Image (cartoon, rainbow, N blue to C red; front, side):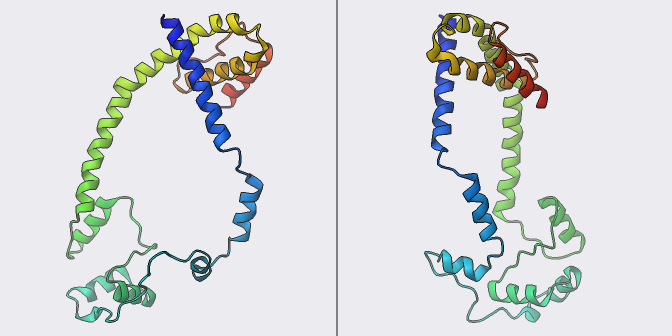
Length: 219
């Protein structure tokens, strides 16, 4: 019964893989590269003309902010060496995202602001970011301690059952490609898990063995 369940799972995985490939069969890399080439010099105005936004985009305000009247602005301008363009954007939009001032993470930017004795705004985004970091740690632990061992067991079971599956269906030419793909897919997954270092089916055709070993060697 266990072998039957594993065989059904292998067939389902194969069918799912074919479905995904079929869904992407209309993608043409040549046309895509040509599209990138034709649009590599596209300007902002041309992009908006070709793809007009569905809602009104407010580029500026009726009453721009008077930056000089803002507390600590002179210190901020001097510290971060704001350019005239950046000041114009800040006045019109009341906020500014500068590409030249990048930090490795939130904490680095906050420490810099705090160290220079500037007003520091703690947003809800930052609190949520911190909370999500703990979720990431929980997920990492689940993957490492629970999902990875179970995946290894599943791949090992599929590995062990493949010779019987091959011997049963290899005589039927309708299953030739499917058996080849299953062999290859399980080998790649097993190699990625650092569990299976050789091709799965010692009884598979030499072409399967050769392709599988070549793929594993290159990866």
